[in-house]
Image (cartoon, rainbow, N blue to C red):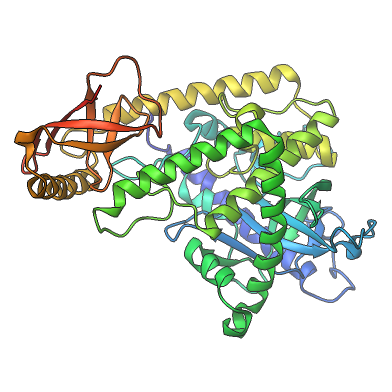
Length: 475
């Protein structure tokens, strides 16, 4: 059972927001002022910047859905020569930077290690926030009565990236990746605790438009964003292409994405309605903006997983999201409890920040995450009543049925046992009628229809007014 937030938790979330606001103000004084450093020591700072790498002079972009409220990832680039690391002029002069909001404060115990900086228990009840995240497990945005968040929104706002705000720092965990632009090979990568500037917030459509537009047509205010997107996309697409060639899990994942895109296109093309860009429902898309974000988060997960493997250290993973399925790792700490713990573990092992979790502790975290996920999955069915279940889908289905009925009437009608092409969605032998977008449970099936499989079905009954569509497999 998922209960409302307790008064104590809400109070702790508000205290966390105040703490993070004061922290940003303190960091800003050291990031954006003279090189002489702070005039006096500040309780929020270690060596002035919490021991972080200062990337606040580098612009970056944050690409997300138009409806996004809590942004937790950003993309940037950095000249390899500025790091002091060896530059292979034939390979590339750039490093790609993937920034993830650093939420590790709430997953470390205050006294776990002397080198970490977490809110004092007298200011913020970190344990209460951590337990709340553990109980919820993950955020869900597909409930009919509204989203179910991992933590109270005031806490998520405080921990998320502040975008489009000049001279506002963000604390992040940054993967830097040096990619060979000749063949997409990942030459070197590493993880850093960083401070980044406020990213330029772009929707997927915004990013795609910038990528596809000519440089001389881009407004001057967007020239930096255009440059970042161009360099980052070139590197990420090369890496992604190579990764898919060499990795079977990546090939399977790409195939799943192509199938989801095909199903989404079929369901939405006939309706004529504007499609969301966040993947909720049947709104899955693969624009250049979407692909770029997917590639950056895949790169982060693969690189961190490889680095942890080389260190021979465990890391928490959600069930079914292992490397054998191309699963993400630590990329969504504002939405998934296990990603927060994965972030903490990678910081401990790869950055020497805090005490690492043991194998047993990582296993226990994975079990807790699976239990919370199952609880939310059960909640879905109990929370959706017949009156509130999928109203947008019902409207789309009615429109699609009228389209199908008109098609059948123009080709001889249902009396002629009309056969039409269909595509399996992979859910309970459900199919979508190609060209119409109507869905139905297919009868006469032995076993289960494979997702993305195409075949002929016979329309046995159709009634757009009542939303009825009966189809059976043509043998």
